[in-house]
Image 1 (cartoon, rainbow, N blue to C red):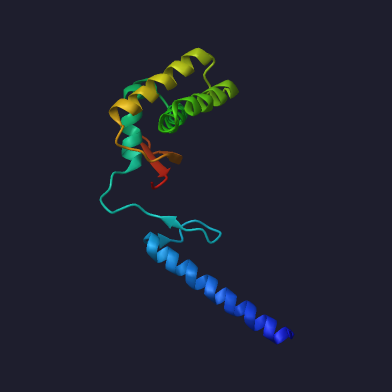
Image 2 (image 1 turned 90 degrees about the vertical axis):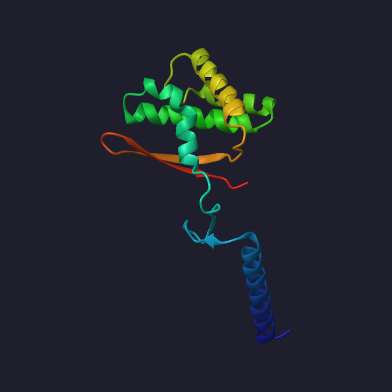
Length: 157
């Protein structure tokens, strides 16, 4: 096969692949090239519940112990761990909690108190927030001076 024919064939396959990708994107809903590298982000329905509001309500009973932005970040990190562990089967969620708590990434000296806090939050998630089944992927907290602004990235299920 000549070089020109091979090149024409490759271009035809590339066009076919691109058309399939565009059709798949149309079927899956509106996509936005929000993240770099050509990735796309699927946005939830307009008027839906904001996961930042849900996460704030989820950790609200413990926010009285927070006195600065770093403490709030640690509380949210523990909250996200408990939230995602509650979405998993119980044994798998417990292994996740054990692995993370063992590494001591929360700035809590006592592993037992950290495990107890996570257990309480998992129970709170399963009882009070059972209708929300979107895993939380990441969050960001900004200090606005007199309050904190929370942004949450969650998966659409």
